Image (tube, rainbow, N blue to C red):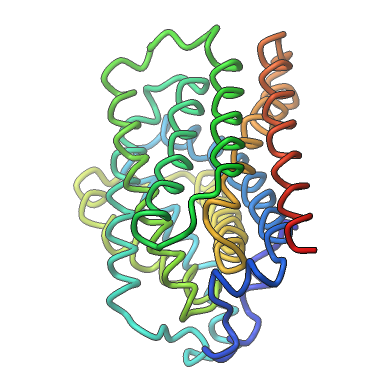
Length: 311
C-alpha cells in the first residue's frame, strides 16, 4: 500500500465522485482503508526516527518548519505538471484551520521529542487513536461500533505490555507536553476526515504542507540555524516520507470511518521494534513479543470482521 508523492499528481476527481464516509463503508472499503493506514504507519515510523535524530542536532522548531517546507518542495513538480487548478481546494478556510491545529500539536511534539525516550514517546502517541474514535462519534456522527472499540482498547493494552518494562517516566514534564499534543493531532485528523468529503487526498496533503510551514515559520526564525548539506538532504527525504505518509493517511480517511482504521495504527509499535533491531541491533524482549502478539491478534480480528461485514 505504500505510495510515493508521484501518486499525488493524479488528476483531482470531481467533487460528486468523492465518496462520503457512509457510502464508502457500505461499499466495503474498510479493508482497503486499513491497508492504506498500514502503509502510512510504515512511512511515519521511518519519518519519526529521522526527525528525532534531526531534532537532537538542530532546534526542534527549525526541524518542524524545514520538514514541512521540504514536504511542499517535493510536491512542487507534481503541482506544476497537473496545474495549479488541480490543487485548488473547495474552501481555503478549512485548510487553514487544519494547518493551524496540526501546527499547534507539532509545536508541543517537537518541543518534547529530544527529551522523551523512544518507548515513552511511542506509548504517548498511541493515545491519539482513542481521541480520534471519541471525536468521530461526537463530531462526525459515526456510529459507535463496539467491535472497533474492543480492537482499539486491545491494541492499546498491547502497547502498554510492550513499553511498561521501560516506561519509567524519564521524560518528566516533557512527557506531559507530548501527551498534550495527542488531542490536537486527533482534532487535525477529524478536520482532515471532513475535508475528504470535498477535496481529494493530494490537495489536502499539499495544503497541509503549505499551511503548517506558514504557521511554523515565526518560531523557526527565532531559533534559526543553518543545516549542513547532509541535513538538507535528510530534510528532503523527510519531505518525501511525510508527503507519501499523509497521502496514505488521507486516502484511508476518505475510504472508511475513522474509527474503523484506528486499530491498525497500533501496528506501528511493531514497525518501531523492527527498525530498532535493524538499525541499532535492539533485540525485542518477551514483553515486546507478547504485546506484539496482542496487537496483531486485535488488528487481524477487526480486519476480518470488517471484511465479513461487507458481504
